[in-house]
Image 1 (cartoon, helix red, strand yellow):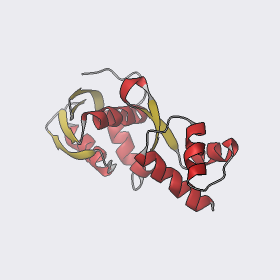
Image 2 (cartoon, rainbow, N blue to C red; image 1 turned 60 degrees about the vertical axis):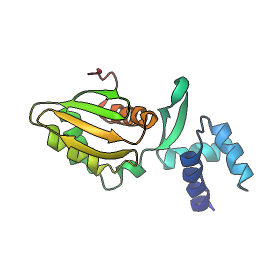
Image 3 (cartoon, rainbow, N blue to C red; image 1 turned 180 degrees about the horizontal axis):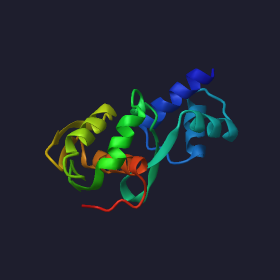
Image 4 (tube, rainbow, N blue to C red; image 1 turned 90 degrees about the horizontal axis):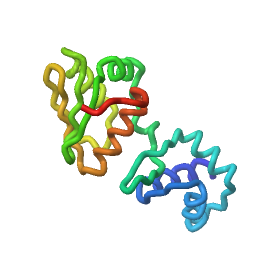
Amino acid sequence: MKTGRQAKIIDLISRYDIETQEELAEYLNREGFQVTQATISRDIRELKLTKIAINGGRQKYAVMQAAAVGMNEKYLRVLREGFVSMDMAQNILVVKTVSGMAMAVAAALDAMKWSQVAGCIAGDDTILCAIRSTEETVQVMEMIRRIVGEGIPQA
């Protein structure tokens, strides 16, 4: 039951912009899962869900753990240590790194296997990431901010 419910949660948050636990409970109830707020809260914690920014200053639940499958601390450390800033140009994410670190940081980003990222090209201190849409560029920027820490300057 729990596995099926948690799989349904992942399915629902990938298809809909679900902002609250109450909204998630409503979707689950429509799908035949009778849940309490405590159950939803536990599932969110166990699935390591996070909220990411979407259009209009709203937020929605997203799976961070799935993005990190196969990711080890080495890649996370490379990203944290090499990252300087980032900016977007529609669906292109420009990441600035410490000189000489762009290829390593790009490899770390590629290793995350985020579905939003079509691919990365790295120079010496700059990475161009092709993102599938402008909205997903904002999502990727938020995921990077969560990894490297808050208060990251824009390029």
